[in-house]
Image (cartoon, rainbow, N blue to C red):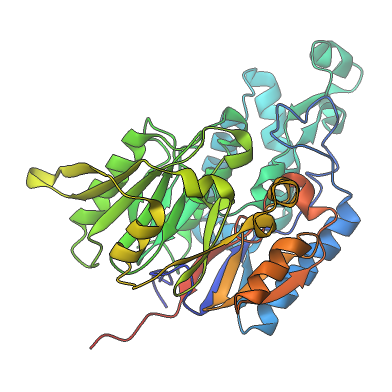
Length: 412
């Protein structure tokens, strides 16, 4: 079966979803490396895995097929054979910033010596401590003298958030140039998945990770078969949105007519559009208070000669969504039920970052109980999952998932 990508909605019944179960990358986090690795705390791995398993079990209980990044990428590399395995490892080591040819060779030999491809991928994600390279025995202190972390290759803890390095739009995909050097390697896995996996190697691409402008998937929300919303954020640049829109409109196999570029606060706590707004039902959105003040939205439509036309819309976001989604009314359900202290606390643990498994049914962290209660009062079913450790990475259920297949609405 080819091209198993179909995503025309944030709320249509979810059929297949991509996730990453946290692994030893969490064990390689230290207080000294948190800032560099864009993590706010060190989760307890055992509990984080238990919570993630509860999350995926909740998805399965709703009829969703859950697939894992490590499995799919391993299948892709094995499908490509030895040449692809060698190419992947050389690229990965180079992008990890290993500049010494000697150390790079040692890393290659070490990783390539892991015969099980899935375990090799997991080790790439976990990172390599300098003491693991036996050929450096007795000299590791010399090579690590200026590096307090003593990691030859940093761990990739943010790969827990499969929403960011790629996005599925319609029957296509975008592979992202990540905003931070720390996260650059995350989209390598998506690159190989969509080049070499037999299910996905013919999927159309609307953005490439080698392009000059950064864009991340947390800023991309497919609102309908006609409309894609993209946040102009700390991590997604306007030029990236324009280039994405050009390629999307050029593909005549879809019906997308509009890209709405929404300017959100340039702050870490509002790092992506999905940290301030996610759709939870046909006419309902969970939102952070900051959304109420958004006054800058741009309509991007197909132009002449493959270009795009960009027009600023002078209307509040609620009215804009009503217009473009052809709804008489859109309801905003506020984080923390609109109370400032509750909203600030629950925004920190991604109270409105929600994955919708079907219209009116979402999965949320149990710790965001005020926001969850507000959702329930507005008729939304909330499936709560434990979250003491998963929430430490600053990403919710929407961040942790990438929809591969959602049920398409019947035409006519």
